Amino acid sequence: MNGDLEKTIDIDRILKGKMGDKARFVPGFLVSWLKHIVHEDEVNRFLWESRHTVGTEWLEACVRYLDMTLDIVGEENLPAKDDGKLYTFVSNHPLGGADGVALGALIGRHYDGKFRYLVNDLLLNLPGLKPVSIGINKTGAHTRNFPAMVEAGFQSDNHMLMFPAGLCSRKIGGQIHDVDWKKTFITKSVECHRDVVPIHFGGRNSDFFYLLANVCKALHIKFNIAMLFLVDEMYKNVHKTFRVAIGKPIPWQTFDKSKSAVEWAKFVEDRVYDL
Image (cartoon, rainbow, N blue to C red; front, side, top):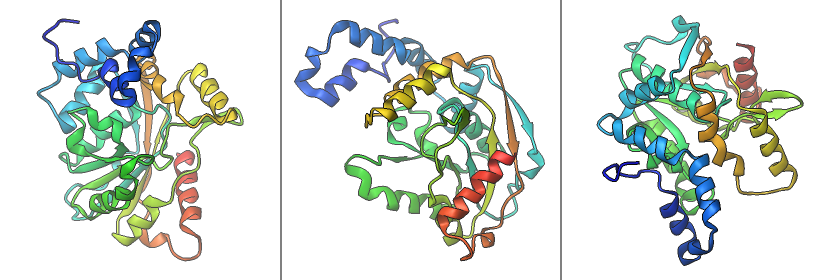
C-alpha cells in the first residue's frame, strides 16, 4: 500500500494497544496472517478513497464497493418520512457486516440520514460510520454507560436500526438463524412510543465460519474468534444479490403485559423469519 495512505485499520497498532510491550512476542507469521484475514490493505485503501464521505453517503459507497444488489420486497411498508413518528427498525443479522451496511444505506436514504445504529464500539474506528452510530462496549469499562447510550438514542429525533441478536447468525440445528433476540428494543420502543418495523435480510456466511463459531462455543472460548473472520466473509459476499423483505410496522401498543418483554422479542423475531 502507498506510504501516503493513512492506515485506519492497523493490526500492529491494535496489538500494541491490547498487549503493550508483549506485542513484540507475537510471531511475525501470525501478524501477517491477521493482516491478511482482515484484508488490512484493501480495507484501508477503500477507507482512504472514501474519506470525504460520512453517514448515508459513506454507506452507499460501501454498497457500491461490495457490488451488492438489493432485491427489496415490501418497500411500501416503510413508513413515510414525514408522518411525524419515530420507528425502531429491527432485522436478523446473517452476514455480520454487509447486511448492516446495506440496511443503513436503505434506511438512511429513505429518511434523509435521520437514523442511528446501535453497534459494537469497534466499528466506531470507521470514520464514515461514526456519525450514524451509538457505540456499545458490552464487556469493557463502558458497560455501565450502555443504558445511558441506548436511552440517548431512543430519546433522540432519529429512527433506530437494531440487530437484536447482538451478533451475526449461527448455524443452529442445520439452519442459519440468529441467536435469541435481546429484549431492549421492545422495552425502549414501548417506553418511547415507537412502532417496530420488522426486516428480514436474506444471506449467509461460509460453512467454515459457522463451523468455527460452533467449535469456539463448544470449547467455551469466550473471545469471539469468529468475529475476526467477518471482514473475510464480507469479501466472499461481493457481487451478490440479497433479498430484503420489509414487514408492516407493529404498533408499540401491541407489546402489552400479556407477554414478557423477552417473549415479545421472540414474537417479533418469529415475524421477521416469516418474511
